[in-house]
Length: 364
Image 1 (spheres, rainbow, N blue to C red):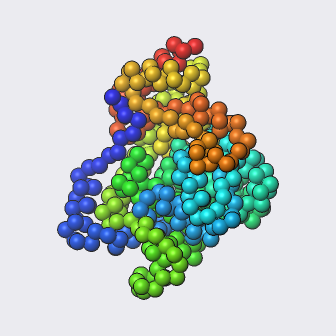
Image 2 (image 1 turned 45 degrees about the vertical axis):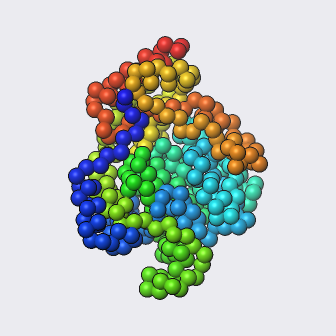
Image 3 (image 1 turned 90 degrees about the horizontal axis):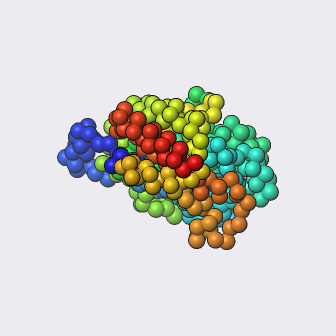
């Protein structure tokens, strides 16, 4: 079976963890600070705050920006539920704008309409599947309407927009290092921001609301224990060094898949708009008959996944929401992700291409 995701660990990760175990400093410490500095430098951001997971990073980013009770945050209905949960967890209210049918990211014009309609306090944009959202347009809206702009870059390590890495366009950004992501720490997350005050508040929030490391029993706000461990950071530092090669491999695999599928009826390959560099966390096609295509791929020993079968407003915790999101509703019925990860061989990619093409042709 060719799996849709394949976390990669090698000797370097094992040695890095072993060194931490031998040091005895396994909790938050110097290794985490080094990882923060290296990840911020890689992305081109001034500050980074490592967290226990990606959801913690989203919540800490919102807390760092002062988003809270009664605030309204315009976001996408087509994402993993964590993007909306984070908004709810800080006491704010998500307001859903529909998505662009080609990119699956927030539609800027729909976003503008909703921001004005609800007098929003922030926009939370998701770089879904590793494709950057339309950050120029969204940043323009945020500036014109005087609202905060947050990037959910959980799936977008190594993605670029107009020559810069994602995570550097908004007031704050959040990354995830879950095992299926483009790089992993096992579990983990990172907040990026150019604003020192935002970074300080986020760092305090994930560390019991402490005022500073120099005053461990001075707490200036209610916070959580959402720190990253030194072992996770050690893995992350190794993985970060390998990330450029992994992104290149993902893009090569995606290019081969797209070339094979561009003219196949019933299957639409992922888009890569001008100015955007897709990181291909997922290679997601749109299928006119998804279930039959999926069945045939699995019969060919090719793993698939549906990200996401249900728009967030249709989930039980969001039952009170009733947004107008026809594009997201249709995408949820048609998207299908196939393997694109760096561990694929050339033969694997060819097999996946042939299987998707043949499956699509058979369902016509």
